[in-house]
Image (tube, rainbow, N blue to C red; front, side):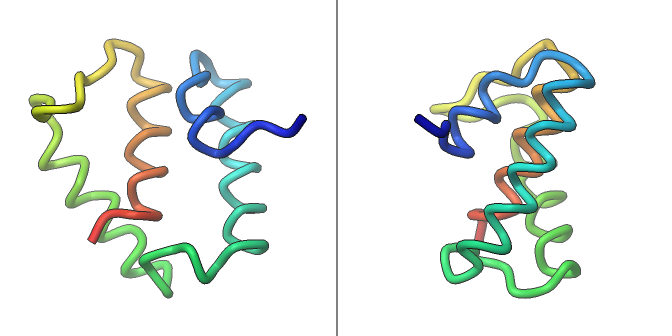
Length: 83
């Protein structure tokens, strides 16, 4: 069974798993563009950066991980859905 993008982002621990996540993120965009809040690279990067800034100290339902690879993957994942 293929893992979801959400499952993959939570499994990121190192460079190899981060790159695997990036590949899955790319495939998700190609296959499910209608599920993305952002329709351009500009809006995607803006959303990712905005969420990253908002969550720099954690959020009510989000505990910032110590692992920088996982944190970067989470920021990129949130660029997909953050408004």
